[in-house]
Image (cartoon, rainbow, N blue to C red):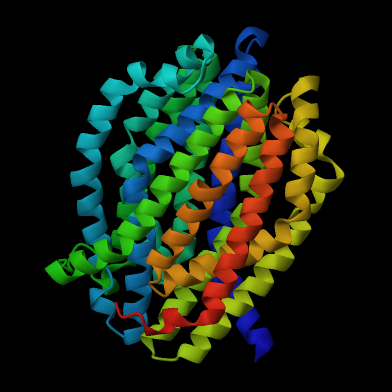
Length: 444
């Protein structure tokens, strides 16, 4: 029985993990390609892309929460046996993404050249980052559409569709990077801006593939037939708004963190960008397991089996903790080698060494935290997740990071130690929330 449960966790989560790993491999490839630019723009380019990426994440955060809402409702309807209505939340998510995201993207595109200089004091970072961010903003509404599809496919446990689409997107992005960053195959050499254009084009290609695969694979769920009711919109927004607010404050917190690190130094910003890419690569399997757990929890709750839902959460947490503990070993044992994959600047390698080791030691706790956070989202407890996440990030970590960094001049190591401490508290809070069991009584 136990072996069958873990086998199901793995079968549901592997395509999600594969897709998410491919997404972060893409980010790493972007960084590695930009790290091969001329020496006069290399470090500033990495800092610019890191800052612009988080600014784009902040801009899109209010629609990215749709993914968890679509997934929770779709999984619950599968459990209830209402297959023909399962695509309703997906359709609602697409409508909200376009109607809200398009005007916001246009406004932010126009404001970017005025805003970016406030994000980093280095003029070169601003010069390189502004066109990159503008290119990424062009795809912002479609990012919400893609995240809605992601939630739907994970909710109906056809995560292989999500993986196949992401792999196609990332392959096209790498090819376009090769052309547009360096000017290969007759394309103009656009440098950092070329990386942004490549990413935007790949997002639109991914949307087209999602729609095609939806037509092929989701007719039984009512794709392009199930008209979302007013109640579906209400349920989606009730679930998505707390998640979107969490994403807004989380992405705003990352942007604030990079702003804080930028006040310490440009080399520190480049080191933080590389560490973030490495840690996301390490985190994503845990996040993928958590998304699988969200679907399993939601399906169990749809069947009114609260005890089975609770067991799925704990089973996924044990699996995630063990997996991320193993993944963290290279960060502990060979941090210099990991950083040198992106940049061979000795100062940047030295800055990143001990922060990566600290993060690697605590990876198994991160795995438990990701699993239980997503299990809470799968149960519809997005408001509690939002309150915990925002409270610890903005009430504790960011003030502490500013005090240790720019104020006390203790450098990147002290800032990252505070980050690790905050992440451990976050995982502990999700553990206590899942154990408390209030999520069992939420109706969707």
